[in-house]
Image 1 (cartoon, rainbow, N blue to C red):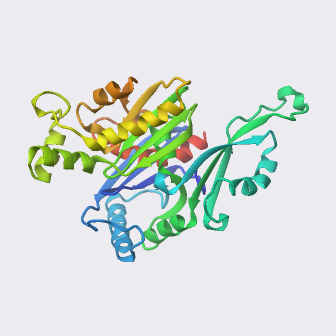
Image 2: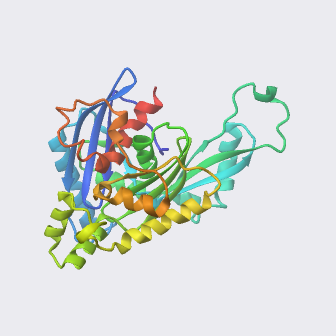
Image 3: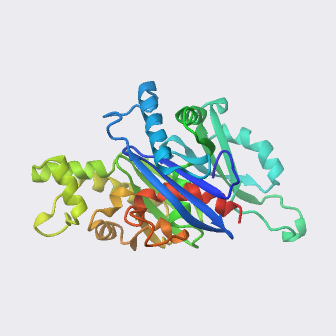
Length: 352
């Protein structure tokens, strides 16, 4: 769900991570998404502990974005950009059965009950989840019936911040979307059933519950791949560079002689359990891991042991036509590009 919209043959998704900016460009060919290009730029040297609203940091981040676009040379000059999930509110609200026009009139009044900020300071988007088909019940009296409305809100300051990052580059923002929605689109798509997505980034993990292609729960915890690296460093008394090298080499730290404890993963596992406990009466088809941190060997088996769920690694390229021989490293890096791919897919999917 986005706050603005765009329509173009080429679509560009841009994801600002804590360690890199990632971009993916797709082309719509007869309604199917084809991979055109992708790029990323490392931003770990921009600032050790970034403050998103530090003007100097923002300027350096904007320069890095310009560097990325100069390398990528996208066909389109409009981009869909992700807002971090922890900066947005996602909630499902029960409304009396009414028309979309009436919902539009009522949404601001109802929003005040759930949004802990002035409505003048937020952008609001909404969607009716259980629309009735035209002619259902012959449009007879619907008194007492309710319907579910997905309400999404994000601070206007976030919109202004990202507008500022794009101010001096040759690409403009056409739409903004919470990263959890982009992630769900690229990894799950329109699959039927309930899925739990666990997106492990460098410093943040998003836990997203989906039902019938719609985000129902969205939680974020300040734990990610960096914490795993720190645990390896501490347990093995090695440098950060060596710990990262061991992670990328395929070493399994969950079994055998190399087994170590990951307190951060235990915390994430407890958050997963809380989400599952709230949904205990409903079957979860699978828990899908994605993000750069999901590549840790042995992690699926570890999560399976804790939750009892079928655990898979998400493949965001499953919804994109791409040439295996010309796609370079994106297949290897696919999980890390899941949000960027989902952003680029948005307009293609909505215009089918």
